[in-house]
Image 1 (cartoon, rainbow, N blue to C red):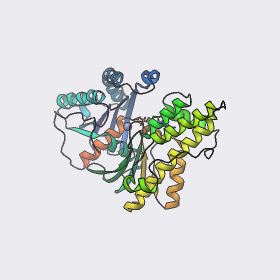
Image 2 (cartoon, helix red, strand yellow):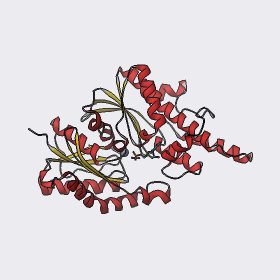
Image 3 (cartoon, rainbow, N blue to C red):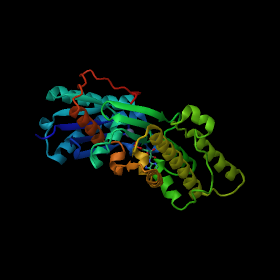
Image 4 (cartoon, rainbow, N blue to C red):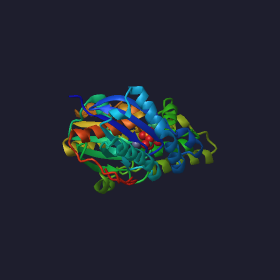
Length: 342
Ligand code: KG4
Ligand code: ZN
């Protein structure tokens, strides 16, 4: 018997994502992004994002159907991100998914966005080993998770207590006069710089901080350190070595992210680490994670970049796992929950 066909819908931030998945096979995946509309504001504007979802949702569903050669009548279940995320943005996807579930008389599954990011990995590498430690690093989230069961038992070990890792890239890019979103520009600038030129702080890493925040992150102090360093240079009338600052900043972020992730693997006796979220595109982070995992005998799973950023495929993938495990569907009064815990 073929596995059920799952339609996934994602609208928690600035990407309208729609995809079809069967089991762990991705059949088609279309993403309409409103990122260009946010560039001039230097960050995602919730109201602009909600309106863009409203315009993009139906055309994106149509395009995905055309791409995979399925009609909505073929769908067996609908999965939608119901949180966490921007409230207005989430509501567009949730309302659309409910309307479809009602009209098609098919079960609806509200999906957690963070767990869905982790689940994207099954589309590239097959079923997730359980338990797995997962590091999620994006513009909105920085979480260290212990995945005992991807559909029903994911525990948050730690999270950023201030800025998300991607947000730190975006803010530091602005300080260095680089464009939004900052991550790719910092990475490009860092290519010509010395990662050891400046020793920037690794947040929540002192012995005292580790007592309370063993698996938490903090990036606001790092951002402030970069700002101070740049300002001192400017005050002294000296040129700012953008490449060295970018490389040293990138190094500090990759160092603290991977160190705590590996510490979590050790603490919980887990042999698998999965990394996802838009910041995973960062090549220094990927290389450092691989080197440290190899040295510790831990196997590392990182999906292709397209599956690391927000998309409907990860939502459909998690929906498929929920169906496979016999979880009860959501009711048609499913709310959007902007601060939903994992
Ligand atoms: O997951 P994502 O596409 O969107 C959400 O935030 O949900 O992540 C976007 C974030 C932005 O902050 C962007 O600056 C960062 O990921 N990013 C990167 C790189 N590419 C994107 N950060 C570091 N290095 C990169 N190459
Ligand atoms: Zn995301």
